Each structure stands twice: as C-alpha cells, then as structure tokens.
Length: 343
Image 1 (cartoon, rainbow, N blue to C red):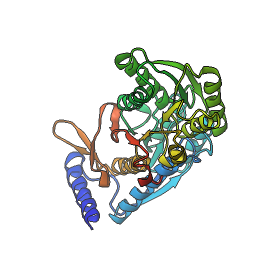
Image 2 (image 1 turned 120 degrees about the horizontal axis):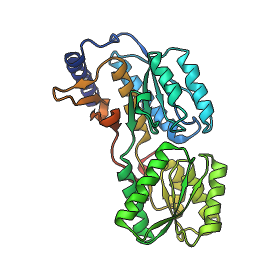
Image 3 (image 1 turned 45 degrees about the horizontal axis):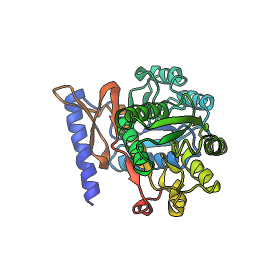
C-alpha cells in the first residue's frame, strides 16, 4: 500500500511539474508507448536482471495509467555487428524508445544517430558510446572513480599496497571496461604507488576464452600477479574457476564485477572473498523510467536549469553533464550478505 501511494504521488508530481516546465506531455496518459531494450547480449544473467528491472518498471507504469509495451532483443553472445543489426531492425518498427548497452564505444554511434533521426528516443544503460550526441540520455550504473577505488582498496587490503594485479576484461574496445581500467590505474598511482598492473587480458565476454585467459594469467604471470580483477560478469566466475582448478585458492586474490549468483559457489568455497557490483535490476528499472519520462515529456526542469527524472520507487535523479544519470554507489557482496540476494 505504501509503495502504491508513493508511486501515485510520484506520478502526480511528475505530471504537474513536468507540465509547468515543458508544457503538456507529448504522449497522452492513456496511450501505450513501445520500448525495446537491447543489451550487449541476452545470454548473461546480468542483462536478464536488467530486463527484470525494466519489466517491473513497465508494470508499475501501466498500473499508473502509463502503459508500456516492452521488448527485449539482442545477440545471444557479445557481438557488435549483431547488435547493430538488431537496432537497425528495431528502427524499422518505429518504436518510441530504444534502451541500449553498447558492445563498442565507436561502432554503434551511426545506428544510434539513425534511430534519433527517425524520431526514436535513445537511452543508454550500462555501457555508453563515445559521442553523447548519439543518444538522449545515459544511465550510468556507478561512478567510475568510486568503482576503481572500491576494487583497488580490496586488493590492497588482501594482497598488500605493492601488489601485482592482473586485469581480465572483455574486449579492447569495451567502453565501460576501459574507463574502469583507466580509473583503477589512476587510483593506484595516487594511493598505492607501488601497486602495478602486470597484464591485461581480454576474454571477449565469453566463458571459454575468459577461462583460457585466466589460465594464461595463472601460468604466465603468477606469482608476479597475486590478484586478478575480472571486470565483466562472465570473466569473474571464470577467473575464480581457473584459480580453483589450479589449486591456488587463497593464494591468488580474485575479485571483480558480476551478479552475486555467479560467484556464490566460489565465495562459499573461499576462493572469492568479495564481489563488487550494483543492482542491475535497479539499473534496468531506472532506464525504463527515464525512457518513459523522456517519451512523455515528463522531465522536471527547475528554474535554475537543473533537470530531474523520476525513477519510481528509487526516487528522483538529477541529470548530470552530457545527460548522464548516475544510479548510485558500488555495493560489495560478502560471505555475510550474499545469500540475501538472488540475481
């Protein structure tokens, strides 16, 4: 009951202030809007969680008289060309909005601009493109510097301030991973000048190649690298499995970014001590609310020029530079709290 009252009050405030700021909403309350979510690839539990959040938001909006037709489409594995083809096919369907997570920082720019030119609202989530003009808004899951600090502080805590670190990433052109790597290096130099990156390996966001690259780190760089930071939801469990298989649990510190269900097994076995992430359900949920508010012209604009978007049960979010909306701070899953989460 409290949740319903809050959502109704949120809707009333958005409609009232939105009308004052921008005029009448461009889509009537009764008119359904169509939103497609295009993840990097559909086969990852991480993006399934994002889908779950978007579906929750669409259901809530429908209950509030703002119906949303929601579709989830994308390549089954990480593939930039297939992602571009998916978005191209969606443009031909003339939806109201597209939510995307970019496989490549440059390659998706033309097709996203094509979508905008066709009158489709374009909202990024999880992974952006290099040109902000290619989309309307980007929902950033976490501040890159905060994430880097969290990961590197954990390495320093468990391995030491002079640790050699191996990074297991997705692809050399993956925008968010590259930003995280740059932030980690900068934070090392600032706070742990003796800590250093021994190697960066790329597992293509696929289980097999990620496992092989983790084995490469173990065989070629241990003990110089006594920590592996795996910064994709696919790579982290594969790195933990490689360390477990090599019998080096407790000797190589493994951390990174993935959904908690992916590493519960390894946390319980003692191979992994912490998993760092955010709530991808909330990420998909907020992205859907942003798309809805954008299509219906329900953004809130203050007299001083600041713009806010309503995020349903998550509250209100201020739009930052380059139309970026920040979900929140990173969260650390530990042996003490990980069983509280199921995604």
